[in-house]
Image (cartoon, rainbow, N blue to C red; front, side, top):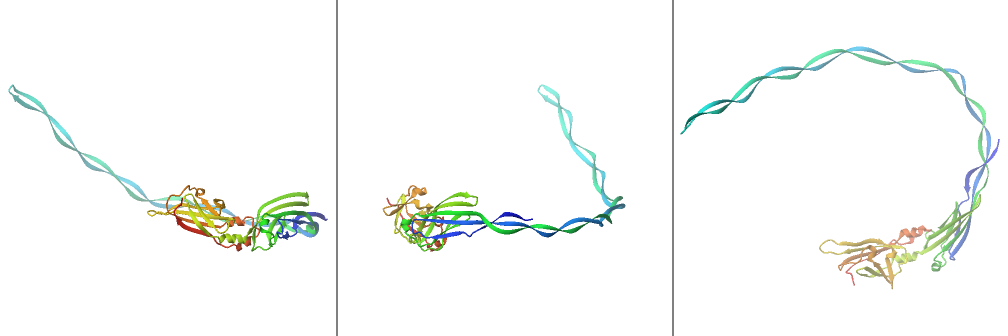
Length: 387
């Protein structure tokens, strides 16, 4: 018997990629990819099967154990303590007062008279008391006690059981035979890519790519280590429309920004000069623009002669903390929770460096980061706040 069935054993064409360059602000690319499934036929092929059959009986034996016990009398001897007591005489004495009445003759000008007087003297009295004193005396004693001794006696027990054997017989088994392929899903992608700062960059020479795989479009770069630009995806929108059970369309809109590697390296070569410390802010000049994704750190120490220096500010900050006006950059201290400095001497250190995390966000050509110098911009000085 033969049966045709379709199993979802998915196959797909390799990820389709289309290359392009930004010779204009907007690029539109069409991509499509087909995923296939294999169709199988179920065939029955001859095979040998086995079943269990009872053919007579057989004797199976095993060892069982009978427990036998007997009682034996044994003599047990031990030392036992018995108390032995005796009475010991002890003389106990105590003192009592023995009193008598005496008559005294008292005379004066009126005559004489007799007056009684009580007279007491201590008298010791003793008597004999018997105290019982005991101690243990050991005796060696023996007695006959019963004790039970047991052992297991092995014996062989046998019984008749059915004799089960494997008997072969002819049968068939199903096998899956691939007979062809059919389309499981056909995906068509319409991709719109906009270079948002094309007016600044103009036509670029870096070859970029858009690839479709599993209904997902990704952007890449053929020349990863570009000398000119970092390409970042700053926004991405996707919509999907199912046309039929085997066909769907996806629409992508990418907004890309090109960041000049030359400008990034120029930022790292900038010099901070004409730094001035005020009570509420720090001002400085730079030779190049601060138009780059950067982050900075500011540390201000108050110098003190008698005791150790006092840390006033030691924090990181982003580009929003710097305000530029008429070519002068300014950092207000209230952004760090400090309203005003005192009239004292301070040590100032300002550091600027590229924000690598922001540069990596949505980056298409990550290897181009190796073209950026590993530098920081630092200036440090000591000053007293000016009015």
